[in-house]
Image (cartoon, rainbow, N blue to C red; front, side):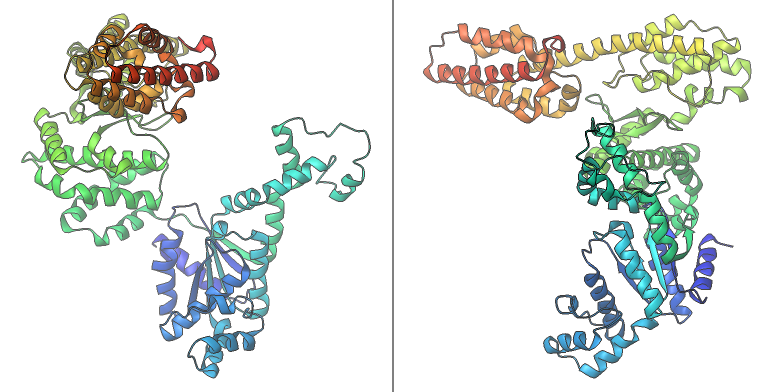
Length: 640
């Protein structure tokens, strides 16, 4: 039996029971609760001749607006017209009374027959009411659940509440937090278990007793929690209002099929053929969020026509090509939705292995820069995408045939095949085939194989990695969980090797950036190009706390002394943009020494051009203010 059918049967059985309390459908955000209710449950109930009214509680500030939404939906259901009754019904219509006043208020404004309107609204109790987004309402959950309890007991309506219970008390607590903190600060010790009256503690404030005095924020949070036990409060009110809770856990395969209904034939065929592979990616990352899957499908649709144009005749290679693209889109979408930043790409790199993040089932995956740029920034250049795909296919860099991928399953291999794969990886390191992101896994696999009895010179491996030309600006992580267990001794070796490679990579990267800046300084329009380079690589400069520290100061000073007035002024504008007040603090700590050196040189110069002299004074003032702010926000020990 399909999972959705089990839910439908359970809900129908409850609706047709004699219960006078509500049913709750509980599930995490993005689990597809709302989609299920709107696209499965409501149509199913319609077939069963059960009329329902769906109301989202999102953004509602008072109970009257909820009531008005209910009657709006009833009017729309009956007449197909949405009457804007909220301003007129908020204070007059409730499900329990004042119906005549409410009808009069409406008919005074709208050209509606009073008798027929009253008949329509009198039928309110016949509807199943579905309240969604309980945790997103601006009304306290106790007030809403009391309101719903009233409807169940006195109006005779069947009610379904759709919510994420994990968020209900958290949101409500946040709304009331200032008041609760104030109460905790005033109150003496409060023991919830003994149910002391909180006001008794106020009466004893005059006593000279500091035993319950709040010393810091942690004390305040602890005391507030002890006084206001939100989970207990919620459980009490829930027990009175809600008869049964169904925990909604969607069948990801059913959801996937439903989401593909609007896909084109080519898109549908590929996604259906790769369905198990795609869903496995989401399962591996424990991220079965329906909205993320929708984003994944939407992103694939964006690139599907380009993928169809770049299919290759070799069936196996074509399968690999499509799998790599789908894995990249799925993994990148999950990274984006879970708050990760874009991968840090070396200038000129368009595809390669990247880190997923810490403590993940698959810590690395093959990615494309253009896919990440579209997911994070909605940036899309079809011509560049075509070039990248052509380059990717021409280099035949599909990873599943790579020796690293094979060694991930070393326990299934013959010894001779393991030795061949080790040699292939070492040859790849010699030729700088592998990016920095793959070094962690290579070291870990080699250490594991050494434990088994294969003899690999780890010193040589570290040296090859240090000398690699295929590096990026992402530091290697200390020991990570790759589902490969190694001894504590091997873990220590691993961390030492990673630290050694990282130190060399930092030097390599710094030299690389310095060389690029030096190349810019030796070109025409250097001031404008310098700013463009900074914009393109600013995330690296922020992370590494510097920009001018990468600049050859002799070359920069020579350029400024010989610059035109336009170039001098443009350089001043560039520095002003880089050292914006909001970006200072520790973000440019390493620039301190070079800024001092530059300012000293400018003060010693006597430019003959009046315009240049004026610009120099302005530049000195700018640099002086930056130095002052750095000295204010950074201790001298951090300025290295």
